[in-house]
Length: 111
Image 1 (spheres, rainbow, N blue to C red):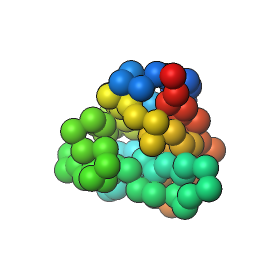
Image 2: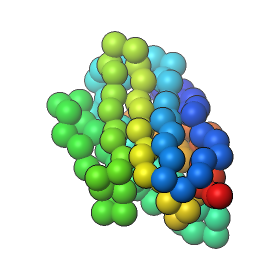
Image 3: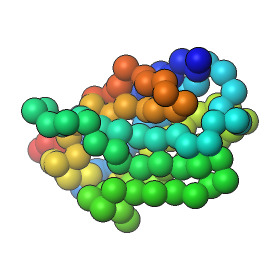
Image 4: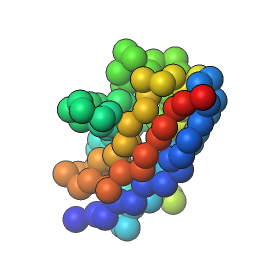
């Protein structure tokens, strides 16, 4: 089972940008769907974006047009570029692949 480690979270002002990365311990080539989830304080974990091995992408309506998910099979990484961040994007962001989860990286959007 692949191990996942997220990075790139932090504190950013509204309107700012962050890029999250997820490093896998092994090859992700054969993993069809990879995803980013997030869990805001007091809320359930929600699906943010997915990308398939064929390059198809899906986004939650709340992040569409602001977030971009991508994967690099050569480097075994999953990324999430987040632009025009809003306070409601504050959450712990988790990488998911083949039933494996990372421990998360915290994103705080605040002035």
